[in-house]
Length: 304
Image 1 (cartoon, rainbow, N blue to C red):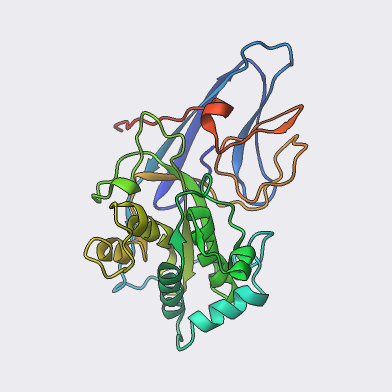
Image 2 (image 1 turned 45 degrees about the vertical axis):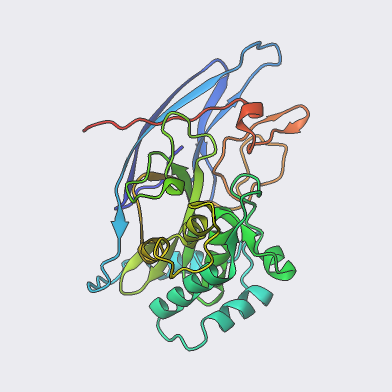
């Protein structure tokens, strides 16, 4: 359930219908809201339908206007801590220190790490779903290909390792892109597979700032039949600039949660929570296979 309320998104009411036993709940650390449903084995046609209403808007940092952020020290410290998939020591910190050499301000460090992701990682279309976000393995193996949950997670982990508060924001593309890139939008009639995570970095003079180097990599790899290798390419340069400090409002956020232990689950905690999840007597179903899982997601614009 959308559970992010900021100046760029308002998560409004959610309603649901089901023939199972249901419960509205959230995780106990990040406030990620969710709907739990359980069904009797005798139920021939179990179903649950959830409808959420949100408001979104484009965001862009005005770099000429400084408006000191308002987060307290404890909150900022929380967003620099390691998680299971985002260690901040060892090779992660070594990589970040090398990438930020010569940078003095937090803006300069963020820019260098963003540029490092764009220059050194790449979109790998064969990765299932949005990837797993195991940044330590990525760096240890040297395999820096992946999707948004890999590339943006690596950006967040590198930021945290050098003291920049940062976080992954897990969500869904809900409409075509007005920015003109076919790969950066969703088909409202069928959004299964439209999950997408982004990132935020806290900069002292600007507050929380939106980032999405993974979408730069997506444009480079998939916007045209030819794999574009340079961020200075005329097609890539505008999106490369825009996604350092902003993103388009055709996307909504679910949560910013990591290491989520799902209620009543017999399985392990999930590294992030961006897909419908289900379990039966045989174990957890494959969230990355919506046709086998049998879930559908759609969206429509409403006027207020």
